[in-house]
Length: 237
Image (tube, rainbow, N blue to C red; front, side):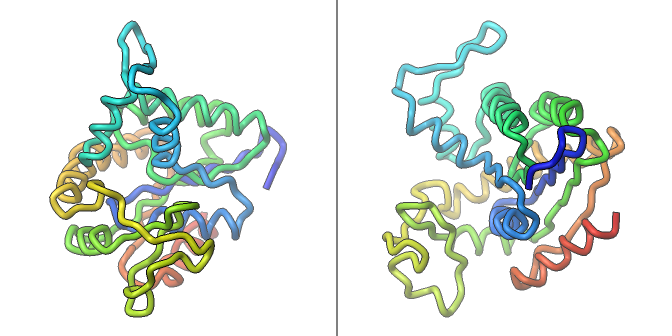
C-alpha cells in the first residue's frame, strides 16, 4: 500500500519473545498491504554480509558486527546505537520508496525509542503511528520459543502444533526445518525474557508520554483469534 507522503501508516508490534508478533506482522502486511519491517532480519542480514573486522562508527565509538552478533546469539539485545543506526537508515529508505510499514520487534530499548520514534513521527505523523502490545505469559513464551523452527531457505517460522510436530521440511518452500542455534535454547530464552522485561517494556510508558495510542492484546489463543483482536483494535481508533 503506497499513499501520499502526508498519509503514511506505521504499525508497531511489541511483545515478549514468542508472543507471535512476527506471525501477526506477516498477516497484517498481507491484509493491509504494508511493508513488513522485521528488525531481527535486518540484524541477521547485516551479520551475514559483513566480515569480522567490519564496524559502524557512531558518535566516535566503533561497534563491531562480530561483537554485536555475539550478543544477539546469547539472547542479549544488540547495542542500542548499533540497532538504531540500522533501523533509521532502513526506515528512511522505505519512506522514500513510498512504503507504509508494519514493524515487529523495534524499538526494543528506551535509547532506540528516543532515537527512532522522532524520525517516524517527523516522516509519517504521530496520528498515523499505531502501537500494539501483544501480551503472553513467561511460561507461554518459553514453550513457544523452545519449540520454534524456521525453514533454512526463506526463514519462514513454522508454528508448533500436533500437525507440524513431525514436519522435517517447510511446506512453503521445501527447505529443511531448523532451530535457531543458541537463540531459542531454554536458557537463552530466559535471558531474552529478562531483557524484554527490563529494557523493552519501559517503552510503553515512553510511548504514552509521547501521546501515542498503545493497545494491549491478549496473545494467548489461536493465531486467527489474536489476528482478529488486533484488527478490531485498529478499527476502533
